[in-house]
Image 1 (cartoon, helix red, strand yellow):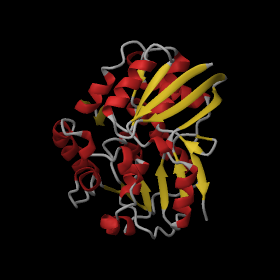
Image 2 (spheres, rainbow, N blue to C red):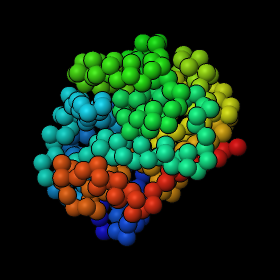
Image 3 (cartoon, rainbow, N blue to C red):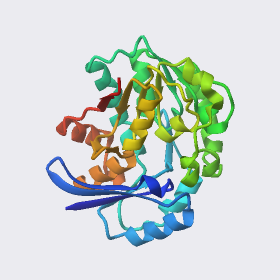
Length: 300
């Protein structure tokens, strides 16, 4: 049995483990949160190194992609440097393929997006998804400045977003990660609806679940959510807020959709290769073999 572990800077209350089978390969998947502690995360990564088949880096991205450019997040590099033997991934490679397919598959399943207004809370860490929306002609507002930097300005044009992202990314990756994304107990706080108006004008909210949740208003009647890393409690909370539909880009195992870093680690373990040896085509081929489709959960 293959064994993959996601070491996350997120809350330990969201820990989960499951034994399943992917493409005929039995695999044990674990997610272990370190409550925002880099020290604990580094210690755990060193303990796991050489003892498991692949490691996922959760709660933080190692890379940000912007078109054909890739930027390394400085704080994530500190974590990655703790691993010397075991293949380590952050999910960004799989986001370019799996999340791109997820949007295309939604449309194939009859979920019309062309008549919907989409809010992507952060697109720079969801490049595959953003690209799919653009190719389908979907009306998208990019919330990277709002949700990542606290600047209350939405970007409403894909080409403009690319230009801004390319200029800001080299600066953003050098910032302390806790300034950009909720980690540890920050993930457990009640949502602060100070950006409520951006949710209200959108029909679909897409992106990282903790980013979505951070400023989510109480009333979300009829909204669609496209995300992952949701727990059973998260789904119940969304239902209580009036959300109509939830699409998780990663498969649901025992009520939990893991992060893309977990799925990428699972694929790396199955392929028995180092991440730099795996191409986008390899990921597309694996997704096709497993007849990949996003999970659609109708709450109303």
